[in-house]
Image (cartoon, rainbow, N blue to C red; front, side):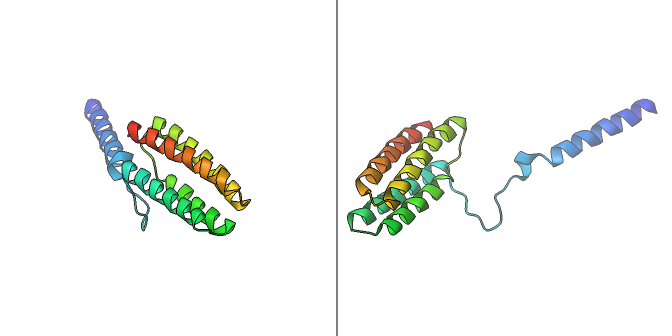
Length: 128
């Protein structure tokens, strides 16, 4: 009887651990759209191009900074592994510097930081 009791406890523990596995029940928040990492990278590149176009077409510093901020926020969707996360943090640094420069009205400096972000995104594509 003692062996049967131990076997039942061990079995129920194994079943409980398997039924609440995070990998088995993982899903995104309700209402949130998830993207594949490569699609997120392409989306960020498109938003960077839109921000550059806005700066070239004479957007106000606030509008240019808002466009860069939108790209920076979308860059947070890139998530695959630790190496990708490290490269993505470099992209975030470039985007933050570009946003700061755009707010100050220094579009040339902002474009330089955006170019650095695009280069890092190209390197990031190779890791995915």
